[in-house]
Image (cartoon, rainbow, N blue to C red; front, side, top):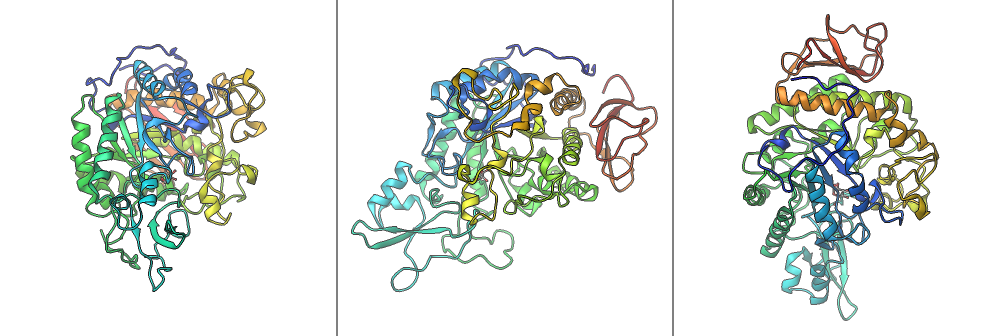
Length: 565
Ligand code: GLC
């Protein structure tokens, strides 16, 4: 197998088939999956909001970048009370993003250039504007319509006490009181996120049937997989107990309940009934990696996001521990690991790694913390090569391939994220990693919208992103984009040759060095000093220039001892 030439820039040419083919049933085990936040990727219509027309126009970019699949965060009709994770209709496209016909065309066009599409399914909750919830409010207590949700009388004589003291994932309360038709205070309903996202009752057959139909709806349209939002939360303990101080396995009333596995077995049967390996990807934030791996048994989900790795600081011991624990937990269920540096919910890597405390916790983003973006960028480059070299699937969040930083000075009046508002402004929220991408030119909107439209992007882009546009980076071999492109090409060849091989090399404690098969070595130097590289090794790619043949601090090098890997 020949190594891809570093200068080889193949143009994007449609070569694929019109529907997911059966040729590569294991595509998902080592795929590179690019996450698109449709509102912020590219605007085709000229209204300052990203859309499907924008994505269709940029498919060549994605092909050229070298991704195997794209995952769309929700594109459905939605009031956007939580960036689209409040779905009002799971089978239509929000008019701001386009039409169902455009989505179908996009799925087809992407397949034609060898890119599969993954859609985001949001089964835990629904928009308060969804007809089911509107009907439940109108129908009143005890009605069958309310049975699809968690309506409950309050505690105390006047029912003014919440049914439980469960805490929302977005801080604050999880119950909101309704008002009866006659104006008197009524029942409460459950929402683990915002009041505009009422939780569905997964004990109800309508809820199960509707989601199975939604899966089939999108599989029928040729999608290669679904990402399952908040996948560990669907089932609740219907006795509504308080959360125990230290819940044992399966004891939490709203998380990781054993009954979930049956739901995912049913979903797997649906996915398996389609040709072309349609996959289920779980969003599972679980502290216990062995419980996490249970969802990946062969008749359940195919893969799940590895948030443990994402949350670790830039520290060799911590990252080594996470890699070991990940590989160990996945092996017995024979599921591929996933490697994820960021997504639309977390701080951009170049910002996070530029801080003294570079760990991540979902509810504790820190704005205004001193940040060295040069250090952060250097580490993010090293981390990009480290993760791309590990065995399993790789996720890239749009804009990370451009090295975009978190935007921390968005004007307060433009912020939209409910995490920010529900924390009373303590949490800066997630808008800063959702700023529209810069494509070209020297001033906003940097080609995000067509120039003639004269519109402003829905969130303002920093003026100094001129140096980070796709156009600027395409011509610069020292750029982040260039690094990603080379890395993804080599990764493809590497995974073809040694899909699962992995073994640590002996190294200093602050160095992560491992072999992937007989002829490929990845070395990441997290120490403050330059280090020697193994003898007689050829450099395939390095995240920073070597210094007298040595690998500098905060850098990764990929090495080979032969012309093939
Ligand atoms: C997931 C999504 C996040 C959303 C939440 C509620 O964590 O990634 O963006 O706010 O679920 O749906």
